Amino acid sequence: MPLAEQMIAIEIENGVLKPAKRTIPTPSANQVLIKVEAAGVNRPDVMQRKGLYPPPPGSSDIPGLEVTGTIIALGSDNISHLHPGDRVCALVPGGGYAEYCLASAALCLPVPAGLSFTEAAALPETFFTVWSNVFDRAQLQPGETLLVHGGTSGIGTTAIQLAKAFNAKVIVTAGSDAKCKFCLQLGADAAINYKEQDFVEQIKRLTDNKGVDVILDMIGGDYFPRNLKCMSDDARLVQIAIQSGPKTEINLLPVMLKRLTITGSTLRARDDAFKAAIAGKLLEKVWPLLESGKIKPVIHTTFALTDAAKAHQLMESSQHIGKIILTV
Image (cartoon, rainbow, N blue to C red; front, side, top):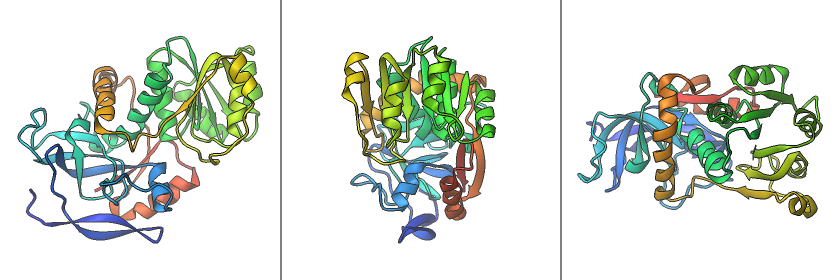
């Protein structure tokens, strides 16, 4: 354990992020304690701050779903694959906005060779989410076409790179010509400015009326019926967030005629065994791509931990491209 007993953490007080003193937590048998160097900022953190996404039972009330840093304590001698001093990044159910954070030993991955702590902090939440939904759930195959809404988000920039790395085609939507240009530079095959173009019509044009095979959607609401119009026969739609609301109207006829699969998921509440299986696949299939430089996290900017409120303001403005990181 560190010599200090207290740490700086970011608390939520009446919807506002404020630095506070907290007792440094003690790891349970299956956990490690990480001295945090950097933490990722994600949309679910904003939802939690607003009272719309409470942490799972037993998890820290401190926001933050991904951290990177150095292991300083193990909860049990049975944790054989990790040691004090190891540089890791970890997916956590909460507690990331702090100087120290508990993580499940099964959800710690080594910082990829060649990446800084700041870069590694951008990996867990988006890479776990994209792999689980695009490759495990939707079973994207080489040669298929993926449509990603929100191409310049942390999820979007990750999905573009991973899908291209595994030989799929990628079409994205984004909210400006500059964002569309960035997505194309990152490897997307086509980018649609949804504020100036009807993405349904553009998808028809780009696919010769065939439609796309997989859609990764964070918007929900009125995007849902429009997504159905973009889908090819046997296509899969994966809903991972609902920024435009959870309710919509559905025409079931195309679902039947085109044999569509509509699914979705949230990652935070899943158990460690489920997440550990994803971690294993990332370590095997994706970490080599990161270490070779074939793919790389996209980071827009960093803020000091105590400036977490400013990081949330930027997140809510949607002016960023890629990830926002807090540094300790």
